[in-house]
Length: 364
Image (cartoon, rainbow, N blue to C red; front, side, top):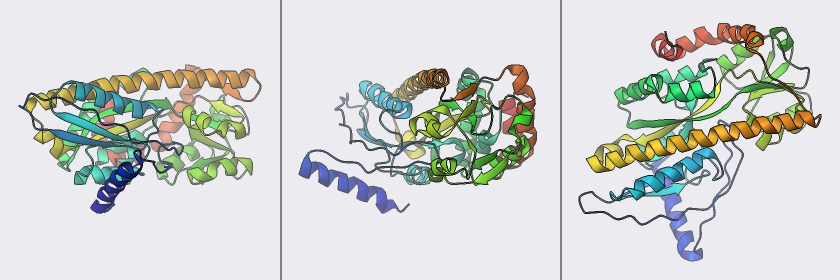
């Protein structure tokens, strides 16, 4: 993304505001993070007070999440808290792809300092810091709470430290969480390893994704996200892997019959901050930043847990209505499935991220 692209976008928004009093946003379609296209409006920028000991700073926080999603609400919490500290920092929010419509654009804009803060999908950041390929690993987390504990604990800090050592102009501010990924198909209920056999599954153009499906006995079929719905309708594919929010929000449940909570991966989002911006903060501004980041992190994980619970209630309702069969695996049932996932992908994960960081997450 050229540096002029962000500047042009900002200029366009300013012109629209002066002419119309409000800005309209362009739709976005983030296939990498399983989010639907949305539109939104530019939020108002709050006025802050300053005792004069801190320079006035306006942060541009741009991301791809719709305003009703947990990530967007967490960014709003960041704005509320940091502005409330009265250290001269004002935050302007640009959600729903107004300034950055892909993870690649978001990362480049952070590096160049065109924006100050953003959110990207876990493995989309990995090409910039190899250790982040650890998120390709299956069963990295036991459950939602384990994911939260690890990402806010020593394993998450290890990734932050590695990124800082790279000195690439990017600071990893925090990690946001999401729902577990599950196995969905139209052939049969999946209750044991043998039940995966022969199912034509949509896969990403990713050797690890393909390997894990082959390891389960499925037939992987690479396909763009935008083609999945019609692929399921036409029987080009017979199943997919995704987290419940994406399935339910985008209506895939209308063309899927069976769901199994394999829970082999959890959606994770990396919150990035421009390193030079942080380095220029005064001590008071850094303290306000840390407070705001923690508040945003707590808010997002709380909302993500609520969303996950709501999705499970919705799936139960669909089953009660006879519209879907939901299989909740016991630990005993999941054992052979878990081992098949790991056996198929662990060597590839180590090759991409390194044994050391994987061992940190595995607790070795």
